[in-house]
Image (cartoon, rainbow, N blue to C red; front, top):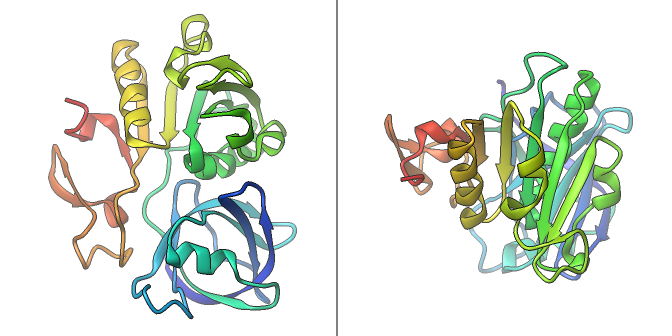
Length: 258
């Protein structure tokens, strides 16, 4: 897929949580085609301690409004600078990068999308794209508390939503792999993104239930093009750059599941 280096205009910056912002970007021309699971590398200007671009998952593409949504965890100097941008300013973006999730082969395919924390970001666009294909996704979203559940009402527009929280303040208490949904229903495939321990737990469930599963890795990706080798992951095919060969991998290819 062709890559573009664009100066995208900031349309809005909305704090949806004390640590997370939703940035909406647009352009005078139609935005490039993007696939669920791909990401963007953003140049961070004005930060004396940030020299490398920041990889951000594609959260949503609103074709009608010509908008690209990015869900950003403002936790470091670079991402805090991104969160401070104002409408009308521009962000220099390299996109779309990487390989995304495998989309349904038919509208009857039952796919479970499992996310935790800011890892829910790429699953929204995947769910919306599935709905456009006539395939209804099921979301299983986890967080520490109810207030840490991100974009919950928007997820509900695109499929069934089930929730776990560690303190039981919303949905079932516990982790996503403890949810009763996994005992009651079977799925053809699982796609997941979130903290590594969560993804490993989902991968174990998938192996035990003989369910095909893809995970979106969050290795440090500085260049986004496979040149710097800082995001290398050990796989059954040798060491692969997550930014170029991923970030989405089938769990059969990963060695960390063992």
